[in-house]
Amino acid sequence: MHEDIAQILFEKAGHLGASFAEVRFEDTTREFISYVNGRITSLGNQKTKGASIRVIYEGGLGFASTYDLSRDGLLKALEEAVKIARSLSGSGKKLATVEPYKKSFKIENVKNHPSQAELTEKIGLVKRIYSYLSERKVSSSIARYGSYYGVIEVYTSDGLHVSAERLVTGISATAVIRENGKVGDSTETYGASLGLEAFTGENSPENIAEKAYENARLALKASRPPAGLQTVITRPELTGVFAHESFGHLTEGDGIFAGSSPLVGRLGEKLASEQVTIVDSGYDERGGYVFLADDEGVPTRRTVLVEKGILKGYLHSRESAALTGMEPTGNGRAQSFEHDVIVRMRNTFFEAGNWKEEEIIADTKNGLLLDKPAGGQVEEDGTFTFNARIGFIIENGEIKEPVRDVVLAGNILEMLRYIDAVGKNVEISTSPFGGCGKWGQWVHVGDGGPTLRVSRLLVGGEK
Image 1 (cartoon, rainbow, N blue to C red):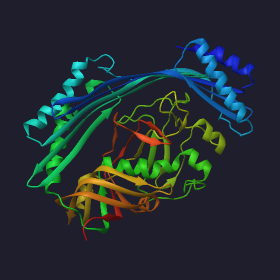
Image 2: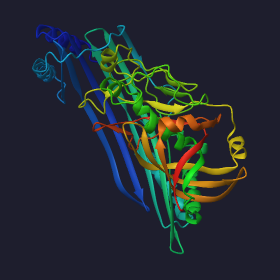
Image 3: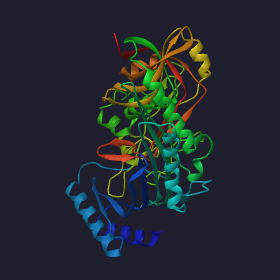
Image 4: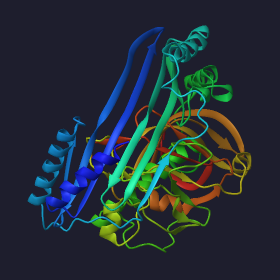
């Protein structure tokens, strides 16, 4: 712990005229293994250790970071932060008030932490994926293992003293099948804020590989869907993309303050059907990324964004909360100590409804059942274009032939009004492979939800 040096920095910051100072220490590790067609193509262990200092001087905010954790190194970074803040004085920067407290946030029930597991065990996971796929004579396969773990410490001159553990591990299987001039491919990933014990049972390497293989075989015989306005049912992974990419970004407090979000000034307004509740949370027992305190030391909490169709809240860091006159929600995040905090999501998902998935399908006369997101893009106003990798045509409440490479287009605020059935089956997923990007920073997130039905959505496919 770095409490003693933090107090020295705060005293120095006061002498230099700063009204607020914060120091954030990071000691994290990122591991990755890629196993392509039976060969290790990359294997790494990257450690990140350093500190950042943030100060406010007469309304100017200064930020500096350093790998040098000596007393002199930290004092030099502090002086640099104050110098920057002075040059920006009069900018009106401020942070929302938080109650002083001291706490260490730990992730519970981790039985085989990646920091303790042997490298041979981690390589064994990707070899098991490859073994399963090679036995089925796929044309090509990729197996991956990844983990991110460590500790963030945050100390502030207004009384925060927080240590928060970070952890996410995951495995991924990609299968490619070529037959009769056609290609079918699929990727299946499972991640959790757990140790290597996560990769057993339903989430064993073999089961992950099997799902990738079966979806690749489906893709072989799938065709493009009919185009036009259709009823669309999204399964949990695809539902999560709408929660995070299309809607969640619109609720981030910096966009609210800047006026760039279409949700500005609409708290209390009905935006969606009564079936819709959307939440952003640092923790949920159903899965996702465990994020118990943010990178400002603020404890994360369940934040309801939409409740039964009504816009209820936004996501805030200390800065955006102060600028909008609201409370911080624990959404201040940074990619690493080298980056300043900005407003980011954690786990963003649609909440459960009252339908079983099979009931939604049986109740749908004609439409599409879609799964497996495959990229897309979103504009600041919520206009989106997403791709679903695989799905099925539904006729008279029955699942028929498979479809692939389905394009969905629309605006999330319009789409939310057409959601008329929401399932009970909430799934929230996360992954150490990539994450959410914003302003050049990447952070780990979770997203998900239940199966849900949209009665009217534009589908791109065959005429």
